[in-house]
Length: 118
Image 1 (tube, rainbow, N blue to C red):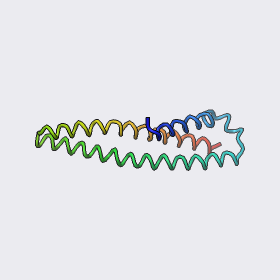
Image 2: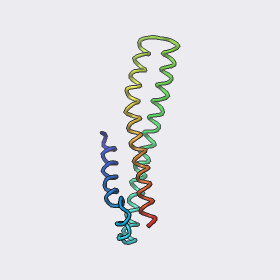
Image 3: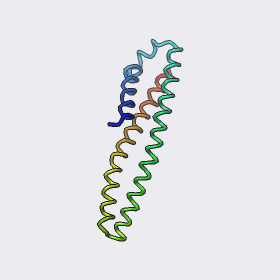
Image 4: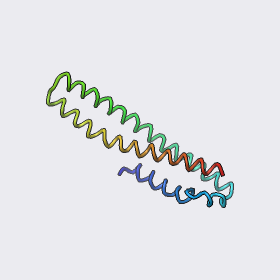
């Protein structure tokens, strides 16, 4: 697990305890909710940036994998097979990491909406 994943999961757990149940939000005064919303927007911005970077890397690896697979079909050489396998081995963790970032940011959006709608 990467440090970004740990940070995202820790922040999500913190927000779940603070915002998860709707009744507790009504007890928080307006200034504290605004501070929490501001802090959450900053964190969402950090995670969105990380998500964008990983999207670019993941799409690049996917394109390289498809091109290598086409090259392997057109010129079947052992080096091309090895390249396709290596790219697939790298692509799987990138997809997993992007999936975790995407779902985490979507949860943060929901928490932010809950926080600001009270």
